Length: 520
Image (cartoon, rainbow, N blue to C red):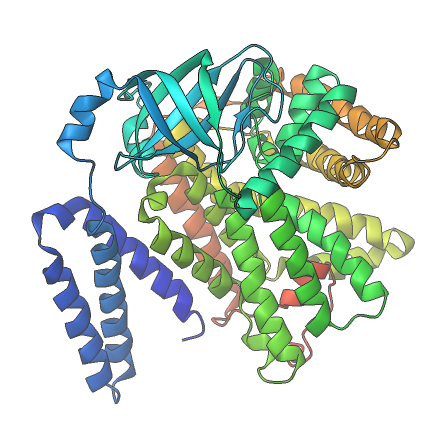
């Protein structure tokens, strides 16, 4: 099967759903026996490919159920003790989010079997007060989170291993001496140093936008601006994701290829930049997903460049599925999170749209050639439109289901704001590189200008009627079915069942045909 990893990922996800719904009613050995029996059946049925594949998928479903059923809930005594928890010592295990009047982070207590989501209230907190990896003593009040506005906040936190929240006053946090430091601690220190330097030269609104756009930290973003991005359906621009990583890596790839570096060496070099981005920004789900997808594609491309595999055997959907399996194996509860669903649905929709037989990229290239000297401009605009439309198709049903809203003008808004976001990212990268020099005050001026323009456009678009429509939850299911039907109809109309894609073109933006795929 050309997309065996895709079916594996779907089976693993189905198993997680089964394990979460009925896992507690069955002992773990039932799922283990089921996985072993179906795997054995796959080995026995070698002469019957359909039976073998079905048995393998069944084994993967059992493994997914086993993985999620093995997750243990918090002990009752821990939940009963939480309201009386006033002082705790532990280690900060997340990159702190720095707001205008508070700092939030996740704490792993020394003597408790669970984590705390801590909010430290302090006036105008300066970057550098607390870092990932610091040992701290907290004095405050803890409580079990409650459901609000239909959002199951306790379950959301529990999937991250967090059993309670804790509010800490200004003088309630003490950083304790600690021996040595982890690599994430040094990465967070570098991040907060850059944030502090940006804060000296950027106005408050633009500073909050820069933190969101470059580092995915929305804590300092003013509420009116965040509301405008939410209303226009452009919140994805404020969460560091595949779009941001793609812009960054696209430029790096272009430079490396222009200096004559072959893919077998260019991919590892770009991979180091991916690790650097993860180290500075932090291991956010959307960035981890994009990084894992790049890793799988890069590994396959290097093998193809050495001639060990055919380039047409590199299938981005398999890479995306492998990234999903890796994340779910580490944290199966992520399957229920809107962020996980949005990032994978939007990316899968883009990959399907630019894969055979749809191959929007080829259609765009053929159409743009008719305009002669304007070919590059037409191709760029149409590619941006196609990517935005595909991403919107994948994300819209999930947004409707989780948030009860659709954004009819989101496609047009993306055409205007995404180029500004890309320009802002490049200005931000330049400012980051110069952040340790006196030139920062001059390098940050273009970033401030782009962010101010971006703010004006988004706030203006948010006031347009019909920018956001409230819909019932069932509308998300209907919209999802419509998207699936549209893709299925497109595949049927093209009359081709195999999907291939040139993974190099995804990274480099080239419209070249794969070397070993004959023209149709």
